[in-house]
Amino acid sequence: KKEGDPSVLIAEVLNASTRPWTMELRHNIDSPMKKGEKIYITFDYRITPGYAFHCYWQIESSPWSKLLSLRLATDPDAKKNEWQKCMMVTENFLDLPARKTSLTFHLAEQKGRLEMRNVTMAAFAPDMPLESLPTNCYPVFGGDYYDNDWRNTVLGRITQRRTGRLKV
Image (tube, rainbow, N blue to C red; front, side, top):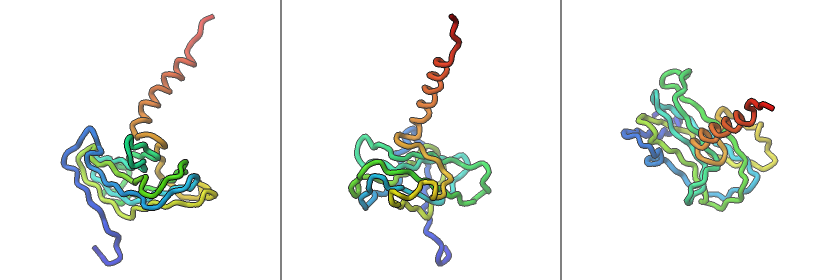
């Protein structure tokens, strides 16, 4: 490491699991969060080809409700060993006391290696326009990443039945 370079966290997943949370990185948010604040999360990451991991901002108690959810996989257009940057923003819809939520990464979906650096989570005033913060990742809001899969399937079936042929 050169002087001034950011520290890098390295996680090596040797055993995949159907429960990706069996290996996780989690950091409790030490400050209270106010309803209406804009929450901006950014980090750099590098992963081995074929690997994927999940990022959550979640409530720190059962049933571990997700306030933000994102799955990140290998970018086929990325150059080998190139750092990727994730930048995402959401609005906080709850008043939350300190240590009630966490920024969490579930790692055990697949075998592989993850390197992370420059992880930040910042709260901005409620009057800050969401579009003023640069983003390149678009998380699922409320619910787990996989919730979107079954929701999209069900919504597709509903649309198909609603717009089906009708004989009179």
